[in-house]
Image (tube, rainbow, N blue to C red; front, side, top):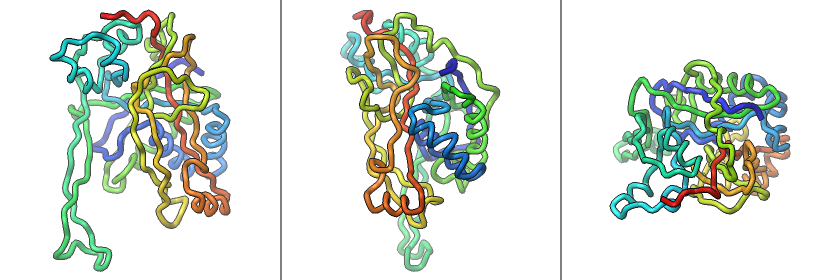
Length: 316
């Protein structure tokens, strides 16, 4: 794959759905098929995914100049008792601290200049009988997020191959115009690209690497390394409405959060993970119903990997 690149996304407001790599890829694929048609979706997304040769692999989106704290952070170094709780909860790292961890050095735990703020807003339930809030309407919470500074950006990293950069940029532009994730119809998840993609070889400049850190929410392939540290999350998704007249919910998927790190004992590959096929993604009846219409959903669950030194870690 080509050199790692960095792209900045300028949010146009709040968002509801977390900026996870597999969700972003799925949303881009939906934007692509709406604009270019089923043939383009098969050629540019589904077939490369199933062949384990995606045109591009992306990270989750992070606050500008921040990266996820590796899952090994609380265990690799001796921390003072009063600092252990803080280390366990450490979510974001400055770029400088992340470089230190990549090279087997103890991080300083500097505070990033940009963070994500999570909030909730209240909405009324709507009666299924009257289709109004009615006298018995109840309030429920809807989560949303935004950056700590209005002039800030989100950053994603990407690797491309076979001319995939143009497809990535066009798909991101389409998605930014329609909005990403839940509540896009009311303005959530809109964004625009801020500047051109910039090569970012610094994250790959670890000459003695024998492990990797994932910058993506992903699901490992059967042949991926197994010695490592990770945090798990379970995703409860559903298919986009274009595929089915009624809501089709996916099977719960166990995913690894960004910051998962693994020992490879040799220089790591550019990416890991695998696509999730229909038979693992959906129940039998939903698979059969969609297959009868020639629809075979796929979820891309690839990990953009950056190298790290494992064997020369310094116990500090």
